[in-house]
Amino acid sequence: MFSIMLIEDDMTLFQEIKDRLSQWSYDIIGVQDFSNIIPEFTASAPDLVLIDIQLPKFDGFHWCRIIRSHSNVPILFLSSRDHPTDMIMSMQLGADDFIQKPFNFDVLIAKIQAILRRVYNYNTDRIELRTWRGATVEYVKNTISNEKGAVELTKNEMYILKILIEQKNQIVSREELIRSLWDHEHFVSDNTLTVNVNRLRKKLEILGLDPYIETKVGQGYKASEEVLSL
Image 1 (cartoon, rainbow, N blue to C red):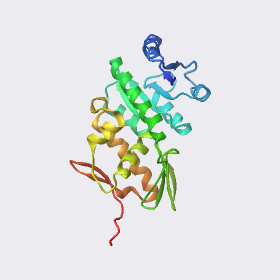
Image 2 (cartoon, rainbow, N blue to C red; image 1 turned 30 degrees about the horizontal axis):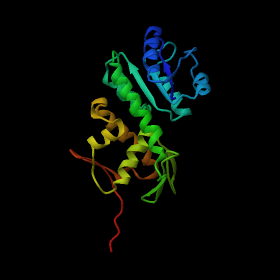
Image 3 (cartoon, rainbow, N blue to C red; image 1 turned 120 degrees about the horizontal axis):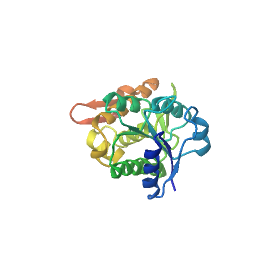
C-alpha cells in the first residue's frame, strides 16, 4: 500500500479526497501542525505528497522547497488559483505535477497512479548505471557525476535524462517524453515538460554537460554523444 501525505487545510476537501483515495487502497496521512510540517513528514515518510498552495502560516511553495531539501519524494500540487505562474513556480521548485481545483477525481487518481508507477517501477530496470560523455549516471541514486563533481536529480529529471541517453544521438519527440513521463498528454501541459528540461540543463551545467541536451525546434530533444570515426 502506498502512503500519501495530504497537506490540505480545508477539512471538508481533505476528507473528500481521503475517502476517494482510500477506495484505491492508498493510506492517507494528514497534517496536524501547519506551522511545522517537516517533523510529521519525516516521521511518516510518505511515498507521495499532495499539497495545496494556499495554506495557513506558510504557503505550499515554502513547504515544497523545504521538503525538496530533505527528500526526492514525488510532489503533486493542488491549487484553486489559475495563474500560469503557479504551475511554473511549482515545477521550478521540484514538484512532479500540478492540478487545478476543482478537479475531476478520475484525473487526480490517474495523475497519482502515473507518478507512483513512474517513480517506483522504473528503478527496477536491470540497467542501473550508464556512462554518457564520460559521466556516470546512476539511475537508482538519481545522480550524475564526472570529474567536475556530482549532482542529484529529481525523479522527473532523471527519467528525462534516462530516456534521452538510452536513445542518444536520436531526436526524442516531446510527445514521446510526455507519454513516458505522464502516460498520456491529456494529463500534463506542454510547458511542464519545458520547465523540467530547463531544470535538468541547469543542473547539468555544473558538470559542463548542458550543451549536449539539444533542443530540436519543432521536433523534440536529443542527448548527443561523441561518435568515434573509424
